[in-house]
Length: 439
Image (cartoon, rainbow, N blue to C red):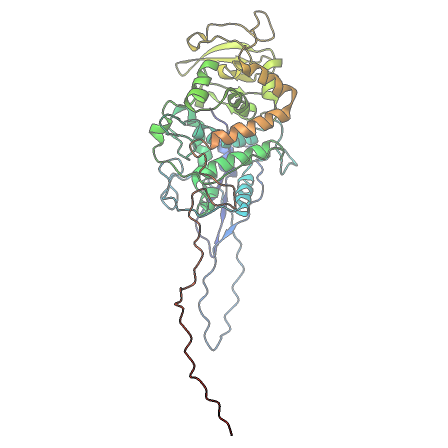
């Protein structure tokens, strides 16, 4: 599925300044539009100028003409960057050993990620329109990147999980190549203080903060290290959209070690983003405010008339649900949270029930149904449950090994306190006795 982006690239040196490249043209090309896309301003990166030492007798040199730094707009993402690393190909460059990550460094990274958001409504500079395509793709893409990274975890083997190692060649990740290219320059800028595995999680947290109108701040701990076996770890691990609740539980509960409440809360991430046939074989946004982090995913799942579709895309059969008025989309894995759509999975395409019409689907008897209703009634409850579930998901296999910004990781060697050089005690010299003289 696709959910995603805007871009900032670094170009060649000009004079003493290193210009920052805007992704304006690239984003427009990716979105297939010629409409103007607005970016928050990003300060240019400047390279310090090395000055030659002055002589004892200064001379009056002619004053150079002032030069203007030019911002270059690339027409395409270069396949290989200047240091030889293509962000869509693994493994990543050698990861340095990090001694810590401060709150100020986290704030700087979040600011640079936010500067990439293509705020897409005239007059808006810090918030997204309700269903703006630029925000929808970029913000949801960041969340999907972290979700698909963590969603490969296997508690039995200890493989996969949130390690920054995402196989971009599998079908589930087809739409993520361009977002890795877009965020690569920001990662490069901060790669001396944060691993890519941590960066992917922090980028997703930032996206949710922006999409929620700055209402949802998710906990973030640092200390993940990068994986290097993406193809093996990611193979056939993510949930299959055509299946239903029993399959989702097999993936999230049995294999990953999460709970039904975690599943129901995490699926709400579909409240932002949209699917595209070219990537997943599905098409459409999940709700009518696809760039806003809200509980409409749940309320529209239950409250709108959904009709089941059987579609053939690229020779593959797909089952999905279409809302005839808004043309929004639900997958079997979504609808099975609230409705009995045909478990077990081999029969999940045979049930032709519909929601809000004749032959209506029965409500799901599993505990997820009650959770869906609770999230419809109280958005803050979903925010809270999602926060807990998201932290669990993004810290799988790192339990007890991460630390909050400004703190050392558990088990990390503390900087030794210098000890004074030991001295050997010596007895003071014995004074010679004095003789009292009488006069």
